[in-house]
Image (cartoon, rainbow, N blue to C red; front, side, top):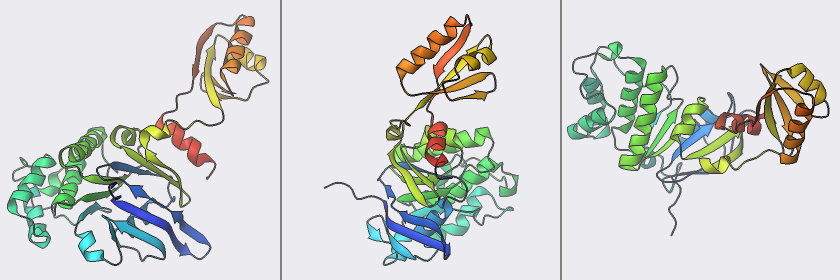
Length: 304
């Protein structure tokens, strides 16, 4: 029997205003042990979705199942199995990392051994008497995640955890996510707008725009996505002359490059012959790479 999804929403609809649905029939499916990247432009419905998953907004239409159970029929026992970071948690600036977690340890029913375990896991076990207010942003974010991990959750939900972090803090957070998945099999749902980092971290993706899911599945499947056209990036000894020679094609200027829309390899070969026939030096002729950022733009552009 296949494993049940850790998160499953069915036809999820949410409206802040009568004629403007923030979510329009959202069907999420997050597999056990995955790092699921939840992507979308600002205002696409990401935070609304996460708030619904955590019971912070009332369910209006559709259903939510978490860890195999209906959320609203089993809200308290289900939420006890989930750790989350949606907004900055209440951590005390005058306390150390260990003292901050001690404040919550009894509430969560966690042992002192678990407290030490999560501090080690997030790399804060040796911060000693250093106060939270003296921490870097990266350290503060790691302590917030340690707090979310304190009750030994089976699911971790993080909303834009890299906000405000410098490059080293972002790398630290990425490595922490990968470690959590590798060593404990924890399922993680993370929303982010830093696509280059998401690409290095997640195993699965969901891309949302205007409350609708445009793509969902393993990240490798997204790379199979090909628009009905592709672009060639071209740089010659005289781009103005090259543009005049290629008037039958749709092209854009991108700095020192020409981006020419083509349908197939035969058109690419024709472009090469045309430019060489003009006695132009051809410095660059290559397909535009379909990295996550470009694929994200391709998918969401028509829903802007």
